[in-house]
Every structure is written in structure tokens, then in C-alpha cells.
Length: 278
Image (cartoon, rainbow, N blue to C red):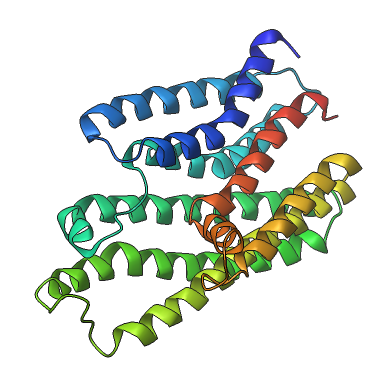
């Protein structure tokens, strides 16, 4: 692997922690500042993907292009999500939601697009693995992501489009007052969120097993994906009523963009595997 390919890999691996650190450390800034930085980062990510995709491989050009497309669809979510470094976390107050309603709609639309891209990426990965003879874990993995993403889209639509409108009505109510329907609906979407996030983590347990069975991932590599994803399933089950640090860990594991880190890392790994495929 050339020095440029190594630097490209390192940069791609660093994107999620950098976005997380900036998004929580600095918080919301004006789009005048964060959009140019996001465009620069997205350009660097695409450049890094291109460098890894250009690596010499013994497979046919058409097959190589299929693997590149598969990897790219798994990487696209975090290419888009990196804009959240400037957006920061969603507002913590109803007035904040109402004041930034358009930005919240953009935020959750980006999340929906990212979820759809990941689903398409796993669909192609399933097809590629079946060609290589792996018919069990890839099918189970695609089944779990196929259940998770519709729930994810529903949840993101609720947060991005329903809540801003509902909150615009809440500001006219007495302080602390909520309509009777609010608590049951809030609990419903809490359960939906836990289920879809756990299913996404389960997907990234099953596909590394499938990649190992197909000879595309070694035991150590697949073990890391499995351990980290299993931790995600465990952490997301921690209810917010539990004391810290359990409630904090549960909150972090359930942040909508976080479960897509594992598919992103699988995508980067697929690009790195191109140069060793025969």
C-alpha cells in the first residue's frame, strides 16, 4: 500500500471521531462557517475513496466497480453526516426547535438519505456475498437492515417533520404543559428508536460473519466488528432512567448517526480489500 493510500485510509477512519468531537465539543455554528468546511471534508473523503479504489487488483474491472459502488453506498451516510459537526446536537428546548425548524428538517432528511444509502449498500453486499457462496448470514443481515431502515425513516420523519410542527403549538401552552397524547407518542417512538438501532447493530454483527465465511475478512477483523456491534446492542438497551454512566452510554449509542459508523467502517474495509482480492 502506497503512502497516499495509507493516508487516505487514516483520514477516512478519523472522520467519525472528528465529527463527534467537534459536534459535541463546539456545538452549533452558523452554516456560513460549517458548510464550506463540510464541502472541503466531503471532497477529501471522496479523494481518499478514489485513491483506495484506484489500487491495483486482480479482479475484473466490472467486478471491481461493483465492489466500489457497494463500499461507496456504505460510506455515503457518514460523508453526509459529517455536516453535523457544524450543526451540533439538536436543540434542548422547545423554543430552540421552533427557532431552528428548517435546519432540523434538513438534519433528519440527511439522516433518512443516509439510511437509504446504507440499505442499498447492504443489498449489493448481500448479492456479492451470495455469488461467493455465503447464503446464510448475508441473508439474515439484510433481513435485519430491511426491517430497521423503514423504522429508522419513520423515526427520523417524526423528529424532523412532526415534532417541529407540534412544538410550534406547544410554545403557546403554559410552561411545562403538554397535550395528553404527547407522553404515549413519545414512548412509542422511544421503543421504535431502540428497536431500529439494535437491528442496525445486529446487521453489523451478521455481515462481518458473512464476510469471514466468504474469505474476505480474517478472524481478528470480524471479531472487532462483532464485539463493537454487540456492545452497541447492549448499550442501546440501557434506559434513560438508569443512573450515569449507563444512561449516558445508552444515549450515545442511540444517537441516529452513531449506528451507521459500523457500516461506514465496513465500506472502508471493502475498499482496502480490493487490492488483495483475486
